[in-house]
Length: 451
Ligand code: NDP
Image (cartoon, rainbow, N blue to C red; front, side, top):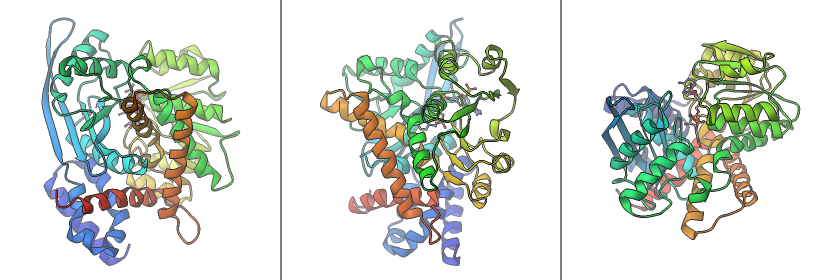
């Protein structure tokens, strides 16, 4: 980093931290972007004069609200709801809803900020947002989850709409929750529109939306591997998480000829040295999506697999690592293990799963590494395709959606290469994704004046 770039970054971050004290995930996400785009901003001083980066790091609107609900025993609970509408320069706000006990304003702002760049990379007209609550569906009955979703939507519906803000799922928000949220939205607004994505197939959903994030992660990894003449065929793959993204990343990796040897949840991970197969994958789908069980039950069902309570899977040797659980799940010590285990490619399925220190270790060791905002963009891209199908009141085939998804992931990869390739031919996907995502939003903001 040159001195002027360093000065710009440090003075920007000092201002941001002073304005947003204690929001460490938000600081982390913004720093990563500012470090990448600072040289570009200094090359085009009008961007600095117009304070484009300062405006991008200030949400257009933050809504925080009370969500009261009653459990099955008649006890009253109060949770906090959030919607961060970060940037609408290139389209209506778009971004998932997360229900997890860890949700707070910092996590919502980091996710909404990342979403702005990710949505820009998809080439589709979508602004950036994120929402959620510190409510966890884990251990709750269907009736409790429904009452919570209805209460949450009773307030959120005032702030969203098909041309304003279109939420989707994220951690803790899958098909069941989207159904309850959509039902309440429709009831209160008396309209059947595409205001939420990830809907059921019978009521406006798109084929392949559940699969899209995980499949897209593997399509992106394929492109990365191809830059070194490699593929998934015969490779050992370590996956973290056991939710939506992990399930379909594992599925596609298997279909592409790889051996997937781990899955995890917040309690621990399983290592199956034989790898997942069709039957085991179907078991995981039922376990997680129907019975809402824990991943340790996999090792009870398949005795060749071992369960490691309280641990992450990064010590298992592999060729490809796909972190698909949550933010900051690969710390520096985990990165050392990944490198030592012979891994050649880390493709992020989760949002910001790798800490800055861990990214530095992985990049220094020469591994291929892509940030989630590029490699997991297939989910929101397919949500964009769901919005298009809702608007034109048509339904595309799975093959049509998959073809769009494949093309979008290739285009995102090409954009990362365009802005991230150095003289030696190495691609810095962090730099590439951040600059490519930034330019489009920045230009739109300049065009639209000081708003
Ligand atoms: P799910 O809720 O379906 O699954 C999340 C998985 O991660 C679960 O196995 C969960 O375990 C685990 N997990 C959650 N929190 C933690 C934690 N603090 N420590 C360890 N494990 C944890 O979510 P998704 O699969 O939808 O999302 C996973 C990641 O992908 C998130 O970062 C999300 O933002 C990102 N993403 C999701 C998209 C989508 O389309 N769904 C699109 C783009 C990004 P447990 O059951 O124990 O909580």
